[in-house]
Amino acid sequence: MRQLHRAITTIAALALIGIAAPTSPAAAAEPDTHCVARANVDNPQAVCFDTFAKALQFASGGVLYDLPKGSSVSARVDALNAGFGVNVVNTVISIEYTGSSYTGSDLIWTGTSGNCSTPTGNVDYYATGMPAGWNNVITSFKTYANCWVKHYESPGFGGAVIGYGPTDSYIGAVMDNQTSSQRWS
Image 1: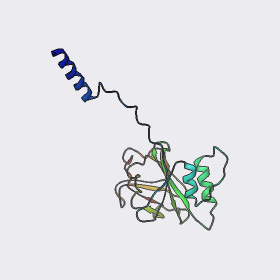
Image 2: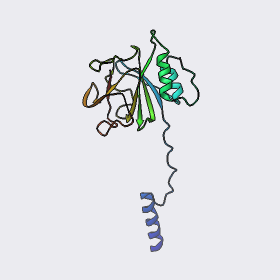
Image 3: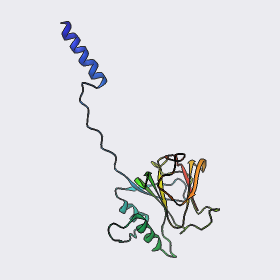
Image 4: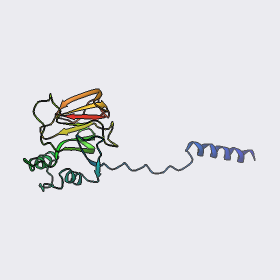
């Protein structure tokens, strides 16, 4: 009887700490999302898609350039921005990534004022906060349309800051996963 009691107690203890219970398979990694948000609006909202091509088509206002398969992201964005000329509909000003070297989920920032001006002493575009799900997740970024971007630690352009910079495969230890607002010039 004591042996049965010890066996039951041992099995119960092991089950409580998860050793005896079979473990469930590891959860599948979340798929990358591809989102678009407009700069220069209060409380920017992201619209997300399951592919980058769909996000870029949305960012372009429906004008997706049919470039050869394998064209780089930069080539597609540059073609998109060049296609609007004087009648600017949407301009892609930067793409922010959750991973280093432009990997992971991405956030395409757009604006309606065309290319950024050359001096960095003025602000062409801004985001006083990040869209839902994009606060404190940026690790790398690429800029377009003659824009350079500043990343701020706090909403409303406060806290630590890095920038203005054109493109960076790693934002750096100070700002990695710390961006809460941005400015483009």
